[in-house]
Image (tube, rainbow, N blue to C red; front, side, top):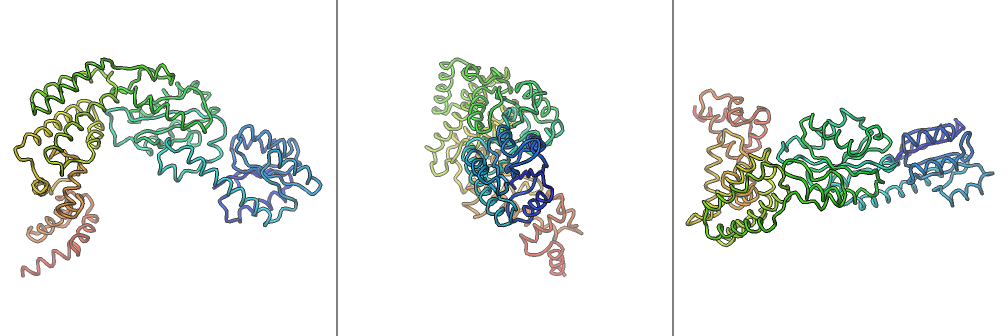
Length: 507
């Protein structure tokens, strides 16, 4: 909905226009009204609107002065003058200068509708243009549904980039949790929280006027970091030092994103907190020659299938992480190198079963909730990959599916995920998904659930006085009603009906 401010000193005319706008089937609403130009200006400053309908002659501030001052605060404001016949030539000049259109008194419904339709078309075109401008900064699905209100463009904004601290709890890092934490400290209308284009990043915008009390952008960043930390959301926060127009958001996001990706360390600190070129060029780690030597040695040990020496060399690199000064980007490149190296080696052994995206496993490991957990998972994962390489006859897809089937059947009373299965067999979730689809023509979730429902049917018939609630809990269902719904979907009847049929057959 687009917001309209109506400034008119005649109350009957104001009410008449307001009623007509409210009755229209257009995406517009009357957000505020004023009986003089000065009142309208104050309201527009505190409550920016998309459209201004203003009488040309008003007390305290006339329509042209109102438009001039309002556009200084909000250059995107679309203004329409309301005028009598005696002001017609004056109004035409005003349109040539800065007003979008004019309405002649008495304002008729058809005339008002036609003008507002053109205004809505103009605003819709602007929305599409804004979306193109913000592509690459805001998450695409969020951007597609985002409405760019007048308040977002009114005045310069302080801009922060929020990211989840490396090796911190990932499940809690959601837009809803972050918004709730911020609303405990700030009024919900004083900031904008936008999911950024890169996963687990958010853009936080605030009005310069509202945040002057906080001092500088860096001070605001520290405050936001503390608010999130206190709410169980360990974050890294970067600030654009100076407030800027919203049209620069894409450029500013690109700068902050580069800094976060390249200068963020595994401990969640930065070389510098400013966005100067010096900060962007600063490296937290050195010794490119040393790194190249380690890469080469690991590649040679892998090529020669020297598992123990490979794992020993890998373990020797891990203590460097505990100092906290290794850049996350460097660690990601290192783990990606290992994943790619094993992927190439496995492709030579059995190309038809090569995993499509080793990066999926890299992202999963880097999402660990502590450095210690990451190190353990990396070593276990590398050892598992080596086992696959060293097997005289590596498991075929059919053999893996048979072992997966046995693994799932032995865990019917648990709640396994596809990631659990992938970790158990040292492969990626996507590879497990492909294997299940190939040999069962089903998804992992459906295949596992089908096994659970087969066990449920067995328990209902063979268990002595088996209660449906007990069977549901045994198979990991907390909600008996949900269990019954799933059972009927997979078995064609309810648990009660199935149990009755089994009892009747026994008789």
